[in-house]
Length: 139
Image 1: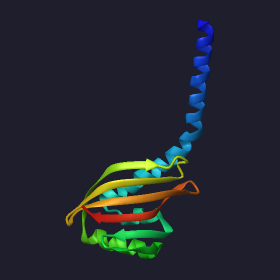
Image 2 (image 1 turned 180 degrees about the horizontal axis):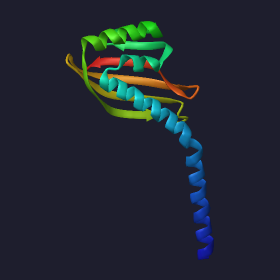
Image 3 (image 1 turned 30 degrees about the vertical axis):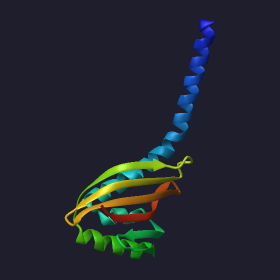
C-alpha cells in the first residue's frame, strides 16, 4: 500500500514539474519585458518605454486622453516625463489574464511635480509584451 502511494506521489510531482517546465519560457518572456518596462519607468527612460509601445496606443495623461499612433504617444509621454522628472516608480499591483496573453501593472510614479498613479495594460505579440494602454493619473 505504501509503495503505491509513493508511486502516485512521484507521478503527481513529475506531472507538476512537466507543467512548469512547459510554461516557464512563456512566463519568462513576459516577465523580462515587464522588468524592462518598470525599470524604464523608474529611470524615466522614454526610449526604452517607446520600444514597448504598440503601433496604436490608448494614452491618458491626467485629463488628456485619446488613441494615438506610436510616434504621437511617444512624443506626449516624453513631454510629460520631461516636465515631471522621475525619481522612482513603485509597483503596487501586477496581474495577468488566465491565458497569460495580457498583463497589467499599477504603480506610483514619483516625480519632482508630484506622485502619479500609473496603469499599464500589455499584451503578448509575437513573444514580446507590448503596451496597449498607458495612463498617468493624479494621486
